[in-house]
Structures are given as structure tokens and as C-alpha cells.
Image (cartoon, rainbow, N blue to C red; front, side):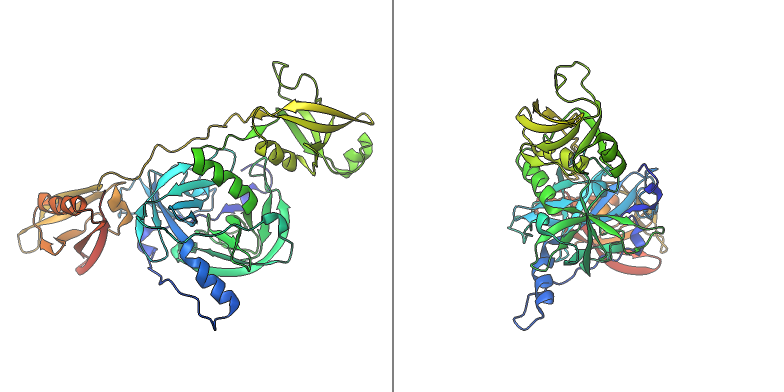
Length: 453
């Protein structure tokens, strides 16, 4: 994060100790005819909102993201567990979330509103936007959200945010749209919706709804001098989300366009200096066309680009968004203000340097990830002890180093091979979980452990 506000911007992803994260399994509430319209809307859309759990190595960027980092004994001490939010955009199991929620993850899991855990595949995540697309295989059509038109959003419109702040699933907060088209120096395409709905760590990647139950944004950033909410949160508008997700669902890439130029805003002082008609447009600062073949001198430093493809250019970010959505290689007509005169030119849309975005080479965990050892119990008999929980499917359980496994699927075990054989049998039978009886700190409890497919 660069710029003077960098230290005040906090991503809303939560990275918290697993022991303090209560994995609740909220019931799916059905709307009642006599229910308040807002409550009925919330009941209707909540089943499509999910929690996104990740396992990843610790990063120096964690503190910059305002995260609460904990290296716990529950998993490999070199790994960190993080939690964010997401929402199902297609009944086939496609899920939208923020890129920063999953970036660098070595395992990703999705928890649906009914408490079901799924290993997730990362379909794609563009370099130029804080957006990612996941997919889970639920074996059935899933409830999904509908996108609204973010271009119709107005300041003062009431909104509802749903997500998993600090791991508390299906948390609902409300507020209004407090500003539009905010530039918070995240990317060249910033067009954030600003809201005062309470957004905290763990809300990242969650949906922002209008009163019709349509998603008009994805909660992504909080702006606060502390770790908590201070009344300023920012969401990526839905129209940009739809553009990205449609392309990712088709090819796993977005292939966005660009013009090889750098631009800046036309301020009042610069408008007076240049004699430009008004404050709209994008003022060219440099042309990154080293070969001289892409723009062929059609655009020069000092030009103000005022229209693009017949549409008015409001500011540099508007120009970047218009170019991003234009087909690569297409010919676009632009209107330029130059030295007191209005000129026109045809330019060719170039491919963004990161047009083929990085995609995690990850298709869900394929191993259990448990390391077990035979130790001697208090009665002198051998017991099975957990020595490590790595980044396999077991990483999404509450097992931790030092736990004693007494039973797997109601079968007593005294040797690691016995336990592992029972886990393997569950996998062969296509059962998603194994029930494990665990002793920890003189207490005994059953834990569900996800087994690999």
C-alpha cells in the first residue's frame, strides 16, 4: 500500500487463532409470509453466503493487512489459518471472494450456511483486481445470489452486509451508501462503493446487498486507525465483479485491455493552465510505447483524453476501466483535447501485461495431512497421538498437536496404522468426514475430520 493513507487502510480478512474461532453451523432460515420485508430478504439470501477458510504460510504482509496472526499448536507452527467470506454466484458451486483472502494459500475450504465444509478449487484471480473465483463440488445445485446494477446505486441507498467477521458466520450489518467512485489507491481501476455498514476482519469477500436482495458490491477494505470498524468501508461494485467472474468462469482468465499510457486527474488548476473545457478526462503524463508502433504518436504527453469509444471519460480510472473492458486488438475512437484544439484518433487496445493472471496450481487437498505417533498412555497402554497437522484435509478440523485419538468411526485405536486405515476406509466409501473421539486436557470430545476424496 503506497500513499499517505496506506497505514490507515485495513483489509477485512481475519487471521485468528483457531482455538478462538467457534465454528458455528447456522440453520438456514426460511422466509415467512408475515416476516418483516428486510428480515425476509435476509433469510432468502443468507444461504448463498459462505465462509472461506485458508491455510497458508505466515507473511510479512499480515500486519499491513490489519490481520491478527497466530501461529498455533493446532497446525504446523509454520502455517497460519485465515478466515474470510464469500458468496455463491452460480448453482454449480462457483464462489466469489477477494483475492487477498486466498492469495498465498496452500489449502482453501468453504463452509456453507448449513455448516457443510468443502475443499475448494481456485479457478482464477486476476493480478489487477482484488477478486478471486473459487469452485466447490457439492454434488447438488446450490443457492446463489443475483447481481444488481451498481451503476444505479445512489448515495443514501440502504444496504445490508452479510459475512463472517472474526469467524461469526452469517453476521448481518446494515448501513447506507455514503459515497461513490472512491479511489483508495488500490489499483488503476478503483471505483469503490463507500458504506457505513459495519465491516470487520473476516467480512472480506462477502456480499453487500441492496434492499431487493441483489448484490451490488463485494466488501473488501476497511479504513480505520485501529483494528476495528470506524464507519468507513469499501466494496467493489457489482458491474465490475460480473465482468470479471463471467470471464473467469469461461476460461479462468480475464484478458483485459489497456492503453500504454500513464495519466492523471485534471484538477481545477491544471484545467485553468491547459484551457481544457472542464474537469473531466484523463491527462496524459507519459506514453509507454518504446517501439513507437502501438500508438504511432497519436497520443502525447499533455493530451487530455475526453471520450473513449464515443463515451465520456470522467477521470483516469474511468479511462482504465473502459480500456480494460474493450476487446484486445480492437480499434477504438478517442477524442483528445490538445493545445486548445479538439482532435480525434483511432487507437488499438493492447493486452494488459498480466492479461494471463496467475492461477494457483491447486485443486484441493489430496492427502489427510495428519502425522500420528504411538505413545504410552497414563495406564501404560499404547495410544495414538497427533504429532502434526499439515495442509491436508485435516487442516480444516480442530485437531491439534498433542491430541490423543481414542476412536475413529466408533472403533478404538491404539496404533497409528489402525487410525490411518480407518480414515482411508472412509475415503474409499466416499464419506466426506470421519468421526474422531479425541482426548485433550483430560476432556474427551468428538471431532469431524474431513477426509480426502
